[in-house]
Image (cartoon, rainbow, N blue to C red; front, side):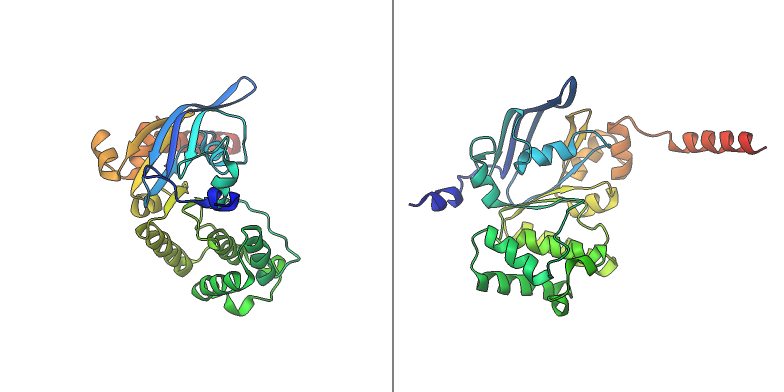
Amino acid sequence: MTSTDSDTAPSPAGPAISLRGLGKSYGSKRVLADVDLDVPRGTILGYIGPNGAGKSTTVKILVGMIAEFDGEARVCGHDVRTESSAVKARIGYVPENAVLYEALTIAETLMFIGRLHSLDDEQIRQRGEAYLEAFELIDRLDERVGALSKGMRQKVLVTAALLHEPDVLFVDEPLSGLDVNASLLMKELLRALADAGRTIFYCSHVMDVVERVCDRIAIIHDGGIAAQGTYAELSEQVHGGSLEAIFANVTKGGGERERVAALLSRLADKTS
């Protein structure tokens, strides 16, 4: 077996993602503290939390963008710290704010990324065109990325992330910039990928979408997992309500109406 074959060999049975005692500090600031989490294969996990709770840091560790951390992180059975090449071969990543080469066309972008994953040109063309046909971008193959709208760029990013058929897909606000029809298509695509055995690590602040799309939900707060389970399980733990209400309860939020009233009162005092 070649080293490349070894890197991409099927992983043993077990969770697609496993975190044990995951921790990360920046100087004296502890961003993640003893995070334990298992994500079953074929699951869409909603990973949600307030700003600064540690969501982005978790994802950056799992995709190999942060090499130094405490604890253990495994993806498809591979150790993120010691088997980063094997992990990167098995994952796709759609960040919230990605930078694309604006001078390249869509076709050139997909060819460039596909070759990085050692796909042959015909595979890249066939898979890329299949996604772009579904996303209604097939007639823009020769258009430069710099001329595309935000929603069109998002479609290119998703296509690029799926070209090599990853086992695990990390997405951060994947519906950003998409119109209603494209959002519906994206939700259906994520569901179909999960039903086919792929695992989706879904980060978002849009609670109603997470509630409808995700099989399981993990709420991170102050660097640790504050609650996790299915929506029904979380609802039972905190006595019902929407995911927004559950989130506010778990993260000690709430009081928004009172804060807005106080804000308007102060503004009124300053203009009177």
